[in-house]
Image 1: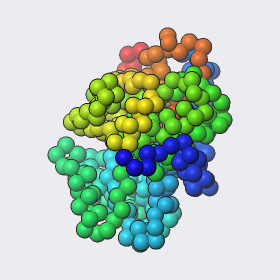
Image 2: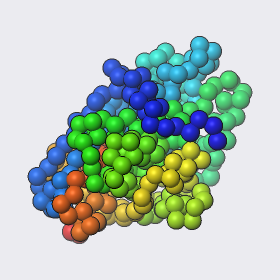
Image 3: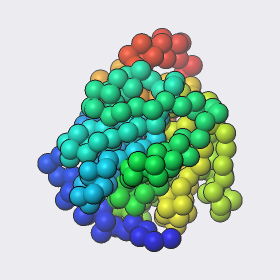
Length: 324
Ligand SMILES: *Cc1c(COP(=O)(O)O)cnc(C)c1O
C-alpha cells in the first residue's frame, strides 16, 4: 500500500485547513468527572463547520486537487456528514461535487448537502452498492472519488482534531474515539502516538455493527451487513485498507456500546453539558461510562464527533424513559 499517512501528514493537513476549519473547544464537566471518577476532556467536533469533524478530512483532500481534478469535480458516497463536508469544502474551493446518498439518510443531512450546493444521487443502502455506483460515475465523468474514510488525505485531515486536543491539554492516559470506517480513529491514533506515547487509544463502535472489533481481534478485515443502529454515522460494513492497517498497529482495543447507552449519553450531553450531540457522536462517552472502574483518577480524552441530528428524531430518542 502506498502513502500510508504518518504524523507529518497530519501537521501538513493542519496547515491546509487553518483558517477554513474551526479550532473547536475542549469542554470539561465537573459533573461528568465526578460521575466517572476521572478528569475528562471533551473535544467538541459537534461545533465544527457543518457540524462534524468530517470537514477536516474533506477540505484537506480537496485542497490537494490538481487544476484538472478541480475542473472535473469530486464524487463521494456517504450516509451524511461526509457528504456535507465534501459539499461545503467543494463550494469553498469552487469544485463541482456529486454525492451518492441512501434514500433514508436523515432529512437534515440531505437538506444540508443540497444547501451547500452538492448534487445528490440516491441509492438503497440495504441493496445497492454505493462504492460501485461512485466508481462508475468517476470513470464515466472523470470525477475524482474521495471516499469517506479510506484515503490518506482524509485520515490525515481527521487527525487534526486530536492534534488540537493534545496541544491544548497535554498528555492523556486514554483517548476514546467514535468509530465507523476508522478515518477519525486512525488519524487520532497517529497523533496520540506522537504526543502521548503511553496513552491508551480506544475505538468505540455500535454493538450491532462490531465489524471493527472483529477485524481487530481476528487480524483481518471482517465484512458485515449494514448494521441497524441509531448511530447512522457508524453504519459501515467494514474498515478500509489504510484504516485497518493503522488501527491494527496503533490502537489498544475496540469497544462496543448499545443504542440504549448511546441515548443515555445523549441525554447527559443535553442535560448536563447543554450540547446537542448526534447518536454516533455519543459512542466515545458511552464507552467511558461503561469502563469507569478502569479509568479511576485518569486523564481521559473524548472525541465528540458530531451534532447533526433531525430535531424530531432527537426528541423522540430522548423521550424514551431512561433505564439508568
Ligand atoms: C463519520 C462519522 C463517524 C465515524 O467516522 P469514521 O472516520 O468513519 O470512523 C463518527 N461520528 C460522526 C458524527 C461521523 O460523522
